[in-house]
Length: 83
Image 1 (cartoon, rainbow, N blue to C red):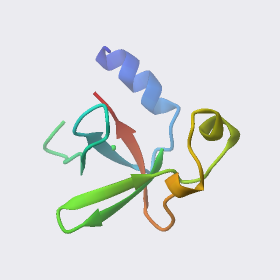
Image 2 (cartoon, rainbow, N blue to C red):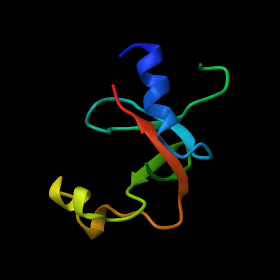
Image 3 (cartoon, rainbow, N blue to C red):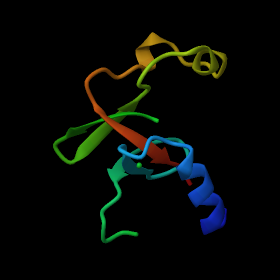
């Protein structure tokens, strides 16, 4: 993906969400993007680790195989970038 393509993708997303980077494509760890490092769901931090979940369950998520257990209530809204 080129920078211009990423910018166009990000323009379509909520602009007040934090940006989170996934450690790998399987989602085995997440980190918030630092302003010196230049991550749609919710994120909670847990002593150096974090948890990612859906903000809500919609039909598209259900069709992709997600269910109520994948919804994370009360986290900080975020955008997750996967490698």
